[in-house]
Image 1 (cartoon, rainbow, N blue to C red):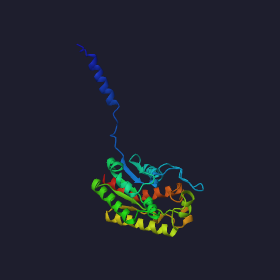
Image 2: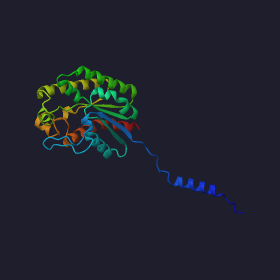
Image 3: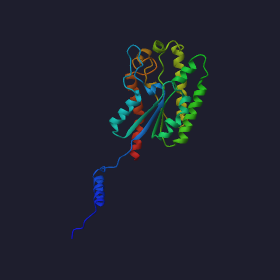
Image 4: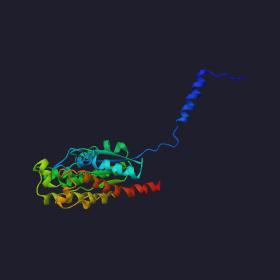
Length: 252
């Protein structure tokens, strides 16, 4: 005797079988999230240029870093750009929960301080090295409290080139010697805090040309990098990140 099944039952069987046929052969794995937070050098627009020097890839070093990671660790990492033009250390502190904490990233990269330096060098100014150090200390303390197991990379700053920055932005900086000394002071603060909080310092300055004309080959306008500059930044960051990434992958 052939048993008859109702139409709703047959439809249910069909839907279940169809769903099974479309199940993925292997489980989907979420990408590791890297958040890069900083100022316009992190945001990296493509319109900055003096004498034809230019960055042509939106996102600058962040986009390039993600491309390098994709080449070497396919489908494993997503790099989120949280750079904002004109931002300072205090600005990053104020938006840390929104732009970093809520994302619960696996890695954080912080590149901030150039606008703090400009504020200090400008006249009149309420910005000081001590205020910058206080803001960065609060940022690192908050990250360690909120994301205690997340590696944090602190990016040192390449020195602005007064000669070329003035062509686009006007006469707002003192001599190159004073600019260099100020960048050295702020980078020393970053290195000291990175050591104090057991963070990883990305030593961009030591791998950037010291000579003004050689450095200019890596700059779009005396402040922001061009294609060559962002290529160099991405490689420096990738080389620093790689050991942490490979160590994490070995543990997993």
